[in-house]
Amino acid sequence: MTIAKYETPAHHDINRQGITPDVAVTLDPITREQVATPDDRQYQAAIDLLLHPSVVAGAA
Image (tube, rainbow, N blue to C red; front, side, top):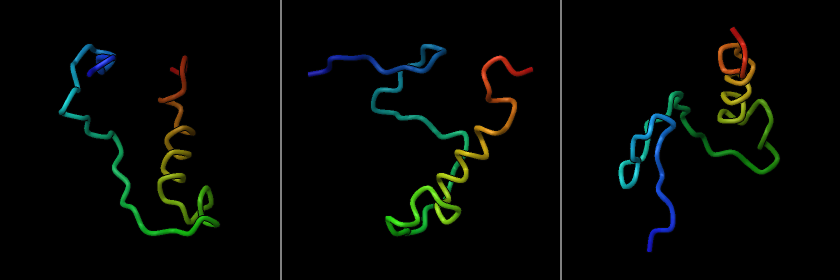
């Protein structure tokens, strides 16, 4: 039973298709202690993206 419709902000249905990420990050096995540290490649990619002015709401 489906209880929601999943779509992009441009109203493209993504059901059973998924979406392609804007930034692909290769995953390397890490320990719990390495999560959210410089050894965590996904975390670092997210931080880099958030610090980029073009993704901040209202930034020109």
